[in-house]
Length: 267
Image (tube, rainbow, N blue to C red; front, side, top):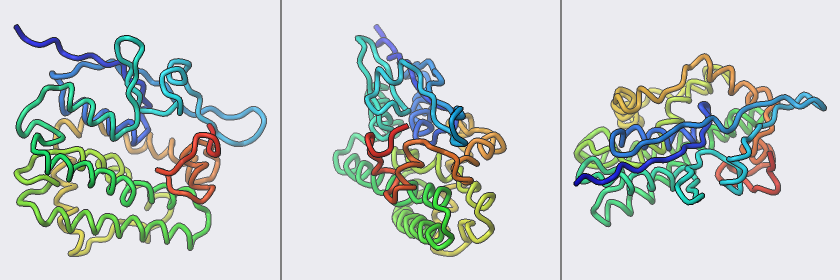
C-alpha cells in the first residue's frame, strides 16, 4: 500500500525570493508532495503618504507571528515558516531517497549543506538588498563588494566538487536552492544601479558561472522563474526608496536583511 502524499497549503508571494526557495523545493519534489499556492502578501500604497507597504492576508498573520512568506499551513492548524526551514521540511516529508534528496542522508554532508545554506543566505543573498535600498553610492558599492566576496567563496567551494553544483555527483541540494532566487534576480542590480553592478566575468567566478548555467536550465527551476519585466516593476519600489517592507526597513536601518526585527522593522 503506497504512502499518502503529503499536502501543504502554501502561503506565498510570487515576487518574494525567500518564498521562491520554498517553491523550488516543492517543485523539485513534485509528485512526492502536493501543495496549493495562495498569494498572501503584496504591495499597497498608503493613503497618508507616498510609501508602499505590504498587505498581508489574515491567514498569514494568524499562522506566522512575523506574517512573512513562505509559510506552510498544515493539518491541525499547524504551520512551518522561514525559507531555509521550509526547504528542509519539504525534503523530509517527501520521503525521497538517494540523490533525489535536497539534504543528503549522510550526516556529514547534511551538516555541510545546512552550514553552507546559512552562509550563502548571509553572504550572497542579503547584500542584494543593500545595493537596492541604500541611497548612498559608497554604501551601495560596499554591499556589492560584500556580495561578490560571498559569491567568490561559494565559487571556490564549488570548485572542490566534481560537478557544477554544491554536492558531488550533480545532486541538487538546499545550498543550490538557497541561492537560485537571488542569482536569477542579480540582473536587477545592473538595471537600477548601473553597469558597474554587473557580476563580473572573472576566472575566480567561473565555477559560479557554470553552476548558474546548470541550475537555471533544470526544468524544476525554469518553471518557477518569474517574468523579468514584471519583477523589475515590482522591485523598483526598493530601488526608488518607496518600499516599506520589513526587509527594506531593516536595511534602511543599517542591518542586514537576515537580521530584521519584527518590532523595529514592522510592516
